[in-house]
Length: 94
Image (cartoon, rainbow, N blue to C red; front, top):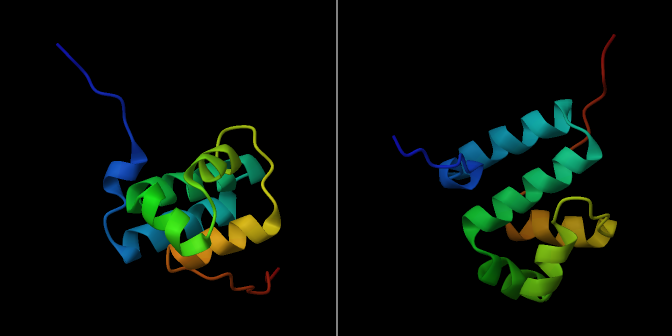
């Protein structure tokens, strides 16, 4: 029996799904997991499109969003805007 590797990018096919995925990772994930999630979202939309919208090259996007990377905050903001997202801060209640 052949199995295929799970790729979350294959399931990020709507703005709602992307937002739910990213919000979940933001709420529960580490910085590494958040960067990886943004990379998955960028791949689901298409790195070429994200590169065009951010003004960054595809290779620099792949590098910035790869495992173990530490991208600049402005890179993260550019990618989030390119995928149609924004950051919101909600106070944590006790």
